[in-house]
Length: 284
Image (cartoon, rainbow, N blue to C red):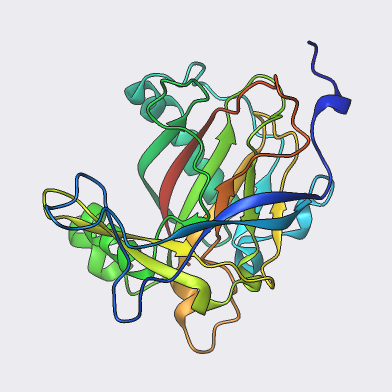
């Protein structure tokens, strides 16, 4: 079936999003990435589904910014030198430099970027990584500082004295506009800190990372961008050190996001595929 504007699901919809509940009082929220030790639960964070109004920002893209909302749309991006997005080394050689330039050009005052990983999500049933249908934030203040120290070596201490952020650069890989499983994101300025649940991710080798689950709050304002295409990029800011200052005017730095089933998607719609590159951004 040919793709036309009328087949692309758009407009404000009510969709089911999956949120997290706070763990029992006095317990640290955790998730074992590998098999849990004998006698321990895999995780102690309960998940639940909630009907949420999700507003389409198509046509209003310029109204949102990293400093206010912790997300931003970049349009009319030149075609990438990377064509297939199947080989990690080719992606690093061809796509990473484009992402670095995109961030430096679009985040005022930024002067240094370090790309530390990427994830490709496919719709195929056998794909290693699929769209994540859980409201979350990829990083916390704890894990962001840890990322700087891990990746920037002897420069870390100096860089931590200035402004540093973690920004994900998300784009679809489909040749057609996205019809299914779009990405939903909530404005940071509508997120209450008490609804952010730091979750320890415990690995078998002893490493402990941290992400954040999100508790539902009706004050959260949710959005998506209908029919995203390959020339568009969505910047998702997971952390901004500036937002921690007492006199800060920054609302950004913690954007909850999740894939969701769009209720208007055709049953036979092409599965959404995407790549997100995660970056440490420094300055000013």
